[in-house]
Amino acid sequence: MAFRAKAAVLISGSGTNMAALLYASRLADCPYELVLVASNKPEAAGLALAATEGVATFSLSHKGMTREAHDMAMDAAIRQSGAQWVVLAGYMRILSPAFVAAWEGRMVNIHPSLLPKYPGLHTHQRAIEAGDSHGGTTVHLVTQDLDCGPMLGQVAVAIAPGDTPETLAARVLIAEHQLYARCLADLVRPSLTVGS
Image (tube, rainbow, N blue to C red):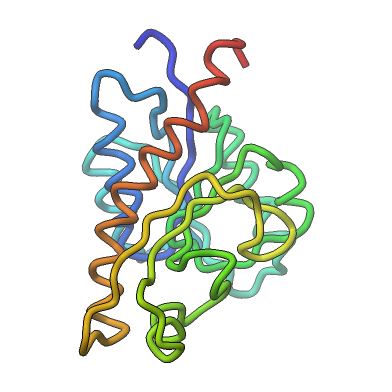
């Protein structure tokens, strides 16, 4: 593929979803490439993985900074990388309204529940306690309202008898790794035909 959409991935931890996106981007027909992996935690393990794979990295601790100042610094690094899309992959920060507005329609997130059920945290525990038959994962565009943007895809994962939040989370993570790359590819592909 001659031209591919450029994406920056924001992480806060191990970066397994980032890694899934990265390895999917190595496939010949993938319409995106990762040009930056950035984190609010300089010690995030995903940064080392990205660097090993030859992807540029940026880190800046949010400690001692206002949310707005930190987001401005992240935004500057993203723009400097040439990224056209922002991909949140375990980025554990609520973004400022200005940052969200700047990337509206071009920022995507993955959430470990079948939205609109269980926005926010502790999703697997909440699904188990509610007696749900399934948990799952949702990819959505990011808006000002937490975990409420337009949905791009979902995968349901059955809740087994005796599941704990940890055992369910492990299976949902596998589903996340499959879903995110597919949804990101479907999202960016139309932009390539219009030359944006």
